[in-house]
Structures are given as C-alpha cells and as structure tokens.
Length: 67
Image (cartoon, rainbow, N blue to C red; front, top):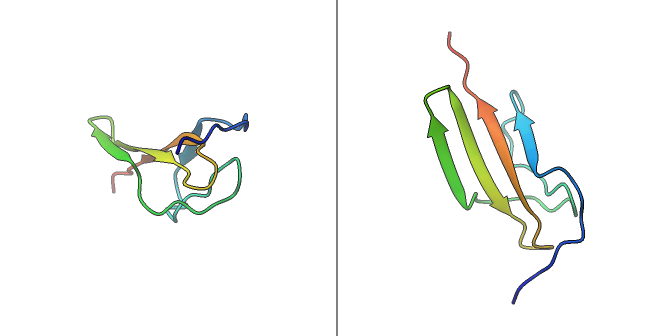
C-alpha cells in the first residue's frame, strides 16, 4: 500500500537539544525507527524518516557537541 502525503511541512527538522523521538510534522504521529541514519565528519547525525500513518517523508539532523 502506498500513501500519498498532501502535507507541505518542512522536509528537514534540525534538533540540537531535544533528542526524543520526533513527531511527524504532517500528522503528529510519533516515529519509532529511522529508515536510514548517517554520520558525517562535520559532527552531525542525519536520520531519514517515513511516517507509517500518513506516508510523509522527512529528515532530522542532530549536531554532536565537543566537550
């Protein structure tokens, strides 16, 4: 089954402090597992998400801070 999303919410969400599970910016559903995660040498972890409820795809990016 394929879901089409009519949501025009931003496709990228930047997180720096709130590391809880993200909510879909379209329907508000809580995401459980990212479809893909990537670490880059600039100190960021990017996650790609797809909402099971509405099919909206979006990404989050977390910056790692050095102490």
